[in-house]
Length: 317
Ligand code: GLN
Image (cartoon, rainbow, N blue to C red; front, side):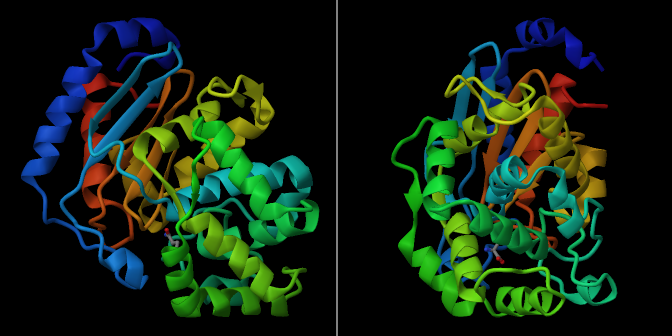
């Protein structure tokens, strides 16, 4: 496998449009596998036979295939962006309130919190993202606007916004998230109004973006914290490194080990069927296919990333 320092060579050696087209054809043969996330009613109505993939390289190449320009519900992919925002304002103190170990249990589980004093295992599961949301509410005057602005600037798409129907659907049926935030609050690890925390969290989950938007939105993680899309430094290199580390170990929940085994890239999934992945110093990617596996990760999206790293040899390992 080629070392990642050979970026330019690796990119030059591969026919990236051809590889994406081949993956697209393979994935479409498997349409029907996986189940859409119907525990959020509005997501239950998304057709399962969709697949998109976008790739944005640091040398300026952009490639899209399939349904890469069809907007979908970002869901937990946004946990990467909110973590970045929270780290900017709270710095290392964030890690006093949320850990950085894989959970090994489902993304919306309550069990560990009881034993671990209300400190979520990591920021990329629901409990951790609720604490991150709380931190953002404490530090930003207009938290939702800050997040929206961040997403728009990182993706280069000024029309990114919240899908009101998905937001309402999540709010109406968010029994587990309500339980989680109250439970964490009972340990003193939530400082703001419960409803305000939940509203912010549902707003971030309900953002609608497409594969290209999302691939662009995490390109700063491939470039040591510098965002080539907006041309600004988003976060310090050491923070970008750590966000990548947490994505690798925790970004796909209790499948993170399996994901590292098959794909070998920092990644973050969402129950909308999106997964972003980062090839440090080379590119960012986003795949989308709404059918999920039993762990809540896009089944065909994971397969597409697996095939991509197999075909290109681009992996951190
Ligand atoms: N909004 C979803 C929830 O809170 C996000 C979960 C996910 O994408 N894994 O359940």
